[in-house]
View 1 (cartoon, helix red, strand yellow):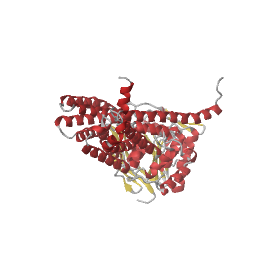
View 2 (cartoon, each protein chain N blue to C red):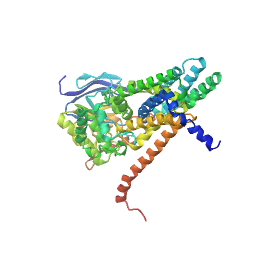
View 3 (cartoon, rainbow over the protein chains, first blue to last red):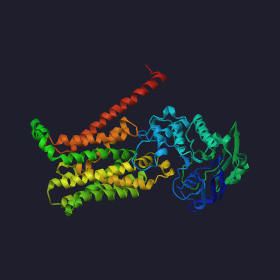
View 4 (cartoon, rainbow over the protein chains, first blue to last red):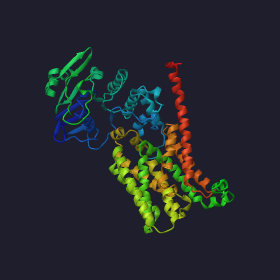
Length: 273
Length: 296
């Protein structure tokens, strides 16, 4: 396999009970590629990312990440930005400490402070523009500020593969752009590949190379022009779906929830606004 | 009871204070170790939202100790066995917070009931009965005190060695797993250490009052600080002051140790809450004061 392949997924399938979410998924992500993963909730996007990290298992298929077959759980060479969720207000955790967890949180042994760690944390905080709030308790920070710090934590080991699980959820427009920009900058500066799960394609549309769209028990892989098309998505969902252009934003209308036979809270996924 | 009786109960032994202190010096050391370690462990108890689990473990620890008392076995061993069984069950069945609380809610009355059954079957010295529930460190035999101190030091070493992965898993479990922290193993080791320190606390302040040293000091520290070093250091200091201060005050009179410990740790918490609330109010007040006009 050529060294510029960051991620290689072969013949992957995911089933929940007797329901098939997708199968026959082959995906090769090259260094520096930005891939958006779209699809309604319950279509296995998060499971795909967690499988790449070795935390969940696919029903079928093999994954090779950064030249290594995924076999154990967790991988420090892969950067991971989880979905934004509020951190406890009194968690005894400042912004700086959240980043530091990425640098030395995995180490066992007596927690002696090290100068090299401190410098690394300072550089990461600078890289994500978090200097002004790094010393405040995380519970007092806004969602956007927390997400920047999570990005800083994910970049701790200078990863060549970055997995982002809806990092923009519940952020305002300015923060969506800021977080996207710093992920994209890491990609351009280091040639890292990015797999970016999102409900909303618009904040990342200008940076995306390819889109992996999971829906209707199947998937579609291609450039944004190929995938974000009324005919293509109607075919994928098996029902009439419209991709509309509203100014410079794309909106998908009429897409059913993948999970509508199950009890599942229906959020706003039929509109990709 | 009039005031002079109260005075006697509290300070009647003051004239012989030096002699009493020499007699209970091992108890003071045990209290000091428990205070320090309890404060440190408490930080993780708070971060992992396990205050209720501490209570559940302590009731089963009490049942274990009561069973040991009944069959004439070693009480410390009994309490450790009870603790570890409870900690193991809670760690194994209650990975998620909601499951955990229901399991604890089920275990706790069962443990307490068992303990009371064993105690009522026990025909030995009746002072022993009550001390498991409400504690009486000065009545613990010196051989057992050595064990309690030793176990406390083992827990201290364990918690220091897994400090960073445990902290990562407590504060940010998703990222910890993604970055290869063995979260299941770390959680189980923590439950084991928690079980051991709870068993020690049962003998020192009693099964019903364990939280005063395993929850309150850490909760107090978190009101006034959020630093990764400051919080555990403060929690350990608060635990130490409560435990040692409580014993030193109690031996001046005839009252039991536990109410002194619980009162000191509660007082520290109240002070920290006031300090923390005042500190929070000042920056907020100035921030809103400039942006919002207050209606007259």
